[in-house]
Length: 268
Length: 286
Image (cartoon, rainbow over all chains, first blue to last red; front, side):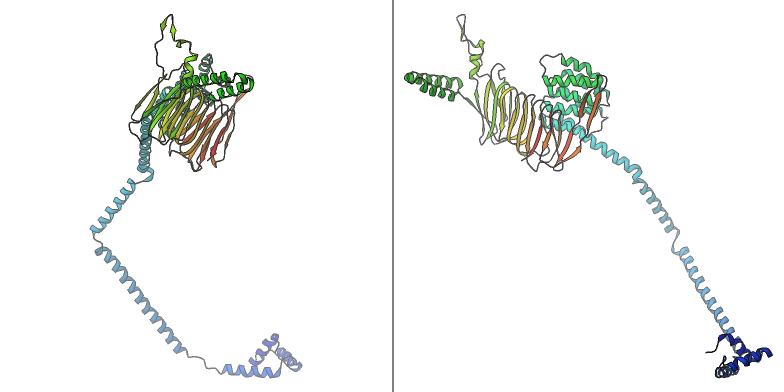
C-alpha cells in the first residue's frame, strides 16, 4: 500500500499541477519504489474514469425541486383545512350541543355538591356530631351508674362505682353520688372503691372536703385505710386534724393506728 | 365434746378400773347432759318459689357459720346456742323466789319472703353456731363480727361477706363475691365466675388467696402495703408505678405510696379488687 504522505504528490502529478521541484521529488520517489508504479497506474486509470463520468443535468434537477415544493404546499394546505374543520366542529357543538339549560344544570349540581360537601365536612359539623354522641354516651353511662347505685345488690353498686371512672372528671353529679356512696353505702368494698374513684375527682374542692369530712365518719378500718392512702396520694394536708381525731378512739386496731400515724407524718 | 367424754371413759377405765361401773354411769349421764345442751336444733324453711334462686341474709355478732349448697328445695338451719345460757348470769332460773319467764330462747328469728330468707335479731349476747344448708342457686349477704370459723361452700350466686375478726373461707363457688374482713385470711375458690360482675376482696391483717377458673376474664386491681403479690396467671400489667414520697419536715421520715397494681387476665374484664395492709395476695389459676 502506498504511503499516504505522498497522496498529495500523486494527485498533483495526475492533475498536472506539480511544480518542477515537486515533479523531481515525485520522480525520485517513483524510482526509489516508495511510490509503487503499478498502483500509480491504477490511480491514473481511476482518475481518468472519474473524469469521464456523466454529470446530471441541471435542468432536470430544478424541475424536481419545483415539484417537491409544490407538493409540500399542497400538503400544508390540506392539513390546515383539516384542523380548521375540526375546531369549528367543536365550537359548533359547544354552541349548539350544550344548551344554556344544560350549563345551568351543571352549575347547579356543582353548587349542590359544594353545599353537600360542606354539610359533611369532617372538620366542622362532623366533629360536633361525634361530640354529641360522646356526651350522649356519657349521659347514658351516668344514668346507668346512678341506676346501679340505687340497686340492692352490692355487686351492682360496685359496678356503678367502677363505671364512674369512665366518666368525665368534671361531672358534679357523679362526684356527689360517689360522696354519698362513701358515706352511706352499707358495703365496705363499695366504699373502698368509692374512695378510689373520688381520688380521680379531687380537682373538685367539694370532693376534697367531702373526703376529709368522711374520715371520722367511717367506722370500718378498711375504709379508714383507703382514705389515708387517698390523702397521701392527694397530699392533702387538711386531713391531718381529722386523722388525729380518729386516733383519739381507744378501740382502734393496732395496725390501723400505725397506718394512720404514718399518714399523719407523711402529710405534715 | 362427745369424743371428750369418750376419752373420759377411757381414762377412767385405765386408771381406776374398780370403779368402772360408776365411771360408766357418770359418762352416760354426762353424755346425756351434753347432748341435750348441744342439741343440734333444726329449722327447715320452705321457699315460696322452690327451684328458683334465693337469697340468705344473716347478720350476727359472734359464733361460727357454715353454709353449704345442697340438692334440695328448703333452707335447713341447724343451730347450736346451748352454751350461752350457762354463761350468761342473767339467765337465772329464779330470783328472789320469782320464776324466770322464758324469753326468746332461740336467740334469733327467721323469716322467708319471695325466696329471701332472713335470719334476724341474732342475740349479740350469745354465741351461736350455724350450719345452714341452702339450695345450690343461692346468693347471700352475711355480716359477722367475731367468727370462730366461717365457711361457705358449693353455692352458685352473689356472695357478700362482711366480717371483722376472723377468716373467711369460700369453697367451690360459682358466681361472684365481695368479701371484707379486718383480721383474718380470705380464701376463696371459684369453680366459675359470673360474667361481667366485679369482685372485691379486702382485709387489713391476713392473706388474700383467690383461685379462679383458668379462662376467667378480669382486670385485677391489687394493693398490698406490706406484703407481696403472687400469681400463676399470665397478667398484662397496665401500670406499675411505685411513688415514693418523703416527709422532710418530720426528720427524714419516709413513706412509700405504692399505687394500685393493675393487671389484665385473659384480655381483661370486670374489675377485681384485692387490697390488704399486712398480708400477701395470691391469685391462682384453677
